[in-house]
Image 1 (cartoon, rainbow, N blue to C red):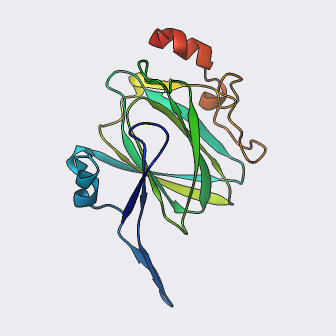
Image 2: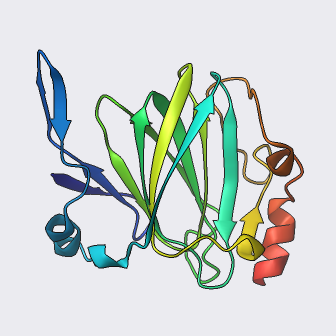
Image 3: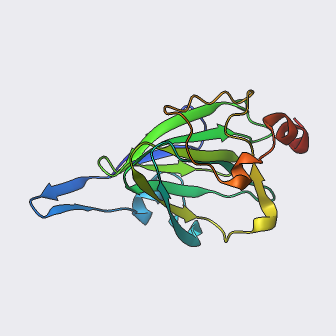
Length: 183
């Protein structure tokens, strides 16, 4: 498994070897030793979750957590998504910067998102399954969200935005989050 770094400190891309034959494929989806070689204690993950999003252009995001935050390892097990993260670490030199990644079931890349990032994705195929390995159990009272079309974030979604949850559509602005974070 190859590990790539990104322009945002702490963000890693895990590129597994995919072994294909006439029956399909085999790929290792996580290796604690590879994670440790890149500064991650693989034992930190406490919960695995999976979502299925139906409809090309459907969108989930932009989400984060307050308190101790939430680190996660994200991969697309079915379909393809345009995955976006935004640095919201108050003391970061890259605060407010975003990066986008294609995650799909062909290259099977995994994105490690450290604490202190907004995260969201748009479905590029008819449906997509996203698998999350998270470092602590979900706490709904710590949920943070910024509207996916916030002008300050200026995220360039590749498709017209399709289905969005009522919760995501009612999310606040990046300016409100900045004030909340004291930035």
